[in-house]
Image (cartoon, rainbow, N blue to C red; front, side, top):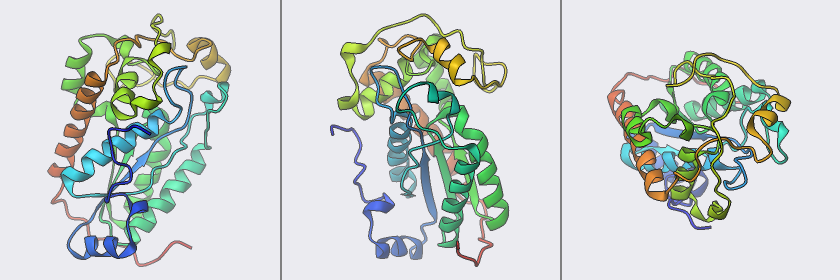
Length: 274
């Protein structure tokens, strides 16, 4: 598969030998990134793994900059409304929470003091991720934070969009550009088609155009997104714009990690997962 990132690289746990991980920890390394994404429809032109590929690519770039390791990605998140489209997966929110708790606790137990969950699935993943991170942080005293692309490099992101909020829709311009940069082989440019702005209610008070929190039913979501599952300006997407978006987000995340790199984090755990 053609890809701009090396997911077989030496910082990914699944590619490492256990002694390499031990050496990293013994030499003072203490940071690991856990990409958490989703497998769901992204229109006729993008792969269903878009959210996970995005999180993996950001983790890959970020790990090099901050000397971190990367945990195996979580490919399925919380997305009940996506059941409206065949192939789309979802866990129960409680299942995702428990899965994350186990992953985070075992990493803390093994000596990772600073753990970053990099969310590629935007707002739907956030509630269970927040609960899991809070529980494990309180229990282990590890420094655990959530990195969500929507909240980093915002000034650069806004400049890149040039006021076009229709690029933010599901599988629209931003996600299309990002996938053209990350996994171009999985993008079908011949199926690009712009559609009117989605009529879905605005759903996240922290993002520019949003005002409330509301979860559509699968039936409502299917109706709002149309038969192709996408609303928005798709043809804006280019690999160059995807690279600019990626760089803006990763640079913002890097700044956050460096800002907190000296924060005390003495692990408070001596029990393994059973």
